[in-house]
Length: 487
Image (tube, rainbow, N blue to C red; front, side, top):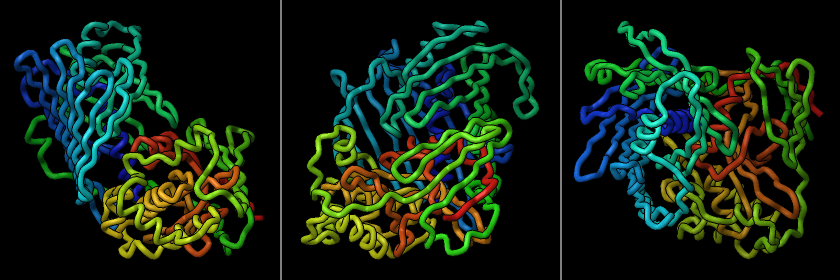
């Protein structure tokens, strides 16, 4: 269960993308990274100007604990822009619990030519540059131009290199007031930045000094306060607190759910916490209705499988065809992934049978099942044969696509009787959905035989990218399960 790792990565990237590096200086600016007041890491930011070019670098290190295991995450990014803020190039190097990757890109004629290097080798791709997208210096100049007068409001599109996406956002300038930075009181202006993600809007709050440097940034994640606070180099590099965040991924069940895998369906009543407004998706296996007091009534009944679906998919629906294409984490065009897909499917001509074979194959193929891997792509899992739910999910999705079956990564909660001392809880989880006939059906290679069932509550779907998991930021931790009815 590495949802928390993905949420942290996405949230930190989100906060950085919304304008952390605002200082007009060649000096290194240091920040402490905090969760609910506990220091878990640091970030160093540098802006350098030379030869009519501006280079902004961010170097982040943090450590999170998940039960008995801890994981150190290093992310280094560099933005190269012209003096007037036009994007030129970018690079990101990350090491997540030993899984490393380097991404480099150069913007040419409205496109970004990207090269990605990792443990599985290197590959190149070209992506369309989001119209009007800005990086660090462009954002700094925009904010200087708009100023810090209370009530100022404007829009911008932010490019996040680690996710290779553009995010449209709205900036609103608030009032100026005293702020406490580890005992140092300074006057700062509050600036709220709301970014529209495919899975919903997320707001971060920045406290900015007159030189447009963000001295403090807050991002809400699962009812936790994630903060970046400007500080001295000595404090930034000081020892971190050891904090176990695994429990943040669990939601208590109101009752023990005996023989859940044998049940055809389940109805869950979700109650929002502290006035939160809940939004959950409806799909072929899950329907969501509104109840009293902001409650949601979630009916989970796994979609029936239909045999005889074409293999490969022969339809023309553009949304379904999109789920056949290789992506950053679901590399269905990787040679090893394609080899595994052929080995799993064999001479099967029925898509439903092929999906079942892939589910079972992945369950047996991944030999080391633990939390030690940060977050690996399908191609990396194909080589390492190691990981937990997220690695099973991306590999199964990639193999389905390689076999000609549309597939996507699903994420949400699953009921477990016991996990690392937690009993009768719903824990953060990832699984796979495949498109058969005219329905999306669930498979779960971590739980064969039986796989996907009534104990899965869907919070979102995507291609396994870190940005997809931001759907959980405004959901997980903001509700409790009041009632369960098994059918």
